[in-house]
Length: 369
Ligand code: GDP
Ligand code: ZN
Image (cartoon, rainbow, N blue to C red; front, top):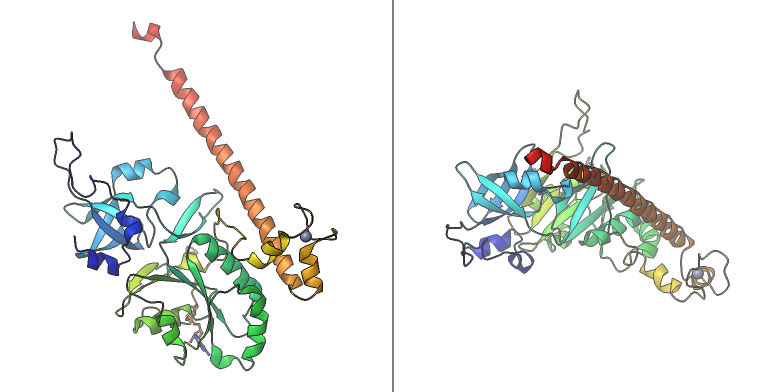
């Protein structure tokens, strides 16, 4: 296998370690039939019934194996953009046999009422949290994206775009200071090309970068600038078609000429992201480390005596708004966990019912005689 070509697509030990002897085409000791080697490929785009894949030999289309379609209990197990899959070459394209475990992922709830996970992008190394230095600037939103990024397993980087419009950069940076928690901050102007070299430094070979940020902050402009060609229309008003769907539903992983991969998916734009493993530990390290010094372990940081968090707020070491966000996100995560528990319980109930039904249906001695 040409591992160099795979490495350029993001292949690494994390995935290689998951290959079994069978995947590599080595026969298990007692299997008489020849086992074909499985081809590792990366999902770069997802259409309704097929996947666009890149592998060591170029591009191919892939469809899910019958087993995978039947087996996958939840949509979260199905391949998403950025995933590494193992395939068997077939007459026309590849059959996808298995999705390899991800090292990071961004998910959202599936559309509709069901409380189910849909992975929108997987195996991302770095996530650019993009904001415009204009009226749209919101530290609260960045705080939220940071929490989601940390929970995803990707490393966040804050990108402040439209520097050409900002007359008082210091003011913006001051408002950002309490929440960045050591995250790198880059001030750029995608329009004028300022600071783009700093972003390009993240585009190392095999390194995957995704962009997160609300509409209009300049994500498409940044992607076009990094890729060096007009990958996306910018500034267009994205209107729904007659069925109320968005017309631009591309969701694609692009390989840059200079090495490195870029993901832009509409799903990443949405702020309500599924975050089952979310934790406040990384994004609210400041509050959490103070809270460890509170006198009471269950301190609510309201008016308890010996509250290290309130003391820090009074002495000006911690912004009051940080505590507010911390509590707000904490509640949200609790709420999420409760909903998830309820959904798991409901699922169990359904499968229990199905199970009892199959037991009841088992033939009795009389049926058999
Ligand atoms: P997206 O929705 O995040 O993909 O944003 P776009 O890339 O489509 O950009 C939205 C608008 O902002 C477009 O009109 C861009 O030309 C403009 N824009 C993007 N980057 C900059 C910048 O650095 N400075 C200024 N002034 N405008 C920018
Ligand atoms: Zn306290």
